[in-house]
Length: 188
Image (cartoon, rainbow, N blue to C red; front, side, top):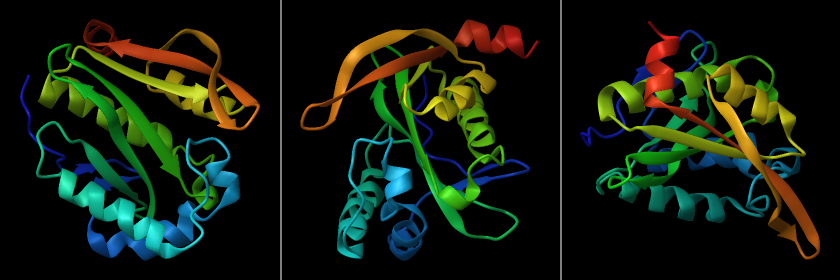
């Protein structure tokens, strides 16, 4: 495997680029404060832009660390930053990573996240050389599972009551993965 950093990736529907400290307002405005977006993620809506700035500063500093793969999702049509996609877990030893992603509500159901996941999957297999890419979603959010399937991932199972979003509110999570051999067979 090679640590090559978060390179610029371009598709028809999305451009994936490194985040900068100047992205806080777009992140906060477009999705971080939106309850509909945060219903299916581990964090609550940001009450103030300062929360967004703090996490963004941490993320930008992390680019200096090895095996950090995180991108802002930009709409080429509007030029706006509309989401993020990243490796929320990465193991060099096991050659595995887990993807996480988030997209502004105004951009749902346009194929943007599917293309972003496909670009990152290709990059992680071809440029970095991972062996396995995983992702998971709350069963309450089947649209995220469809993104994973369209990107070539296979459902491996459901973990019952794996996540507690709020006190007493336990969620089931569906797990998906794609192996390097699956990816290359699919793209022969």
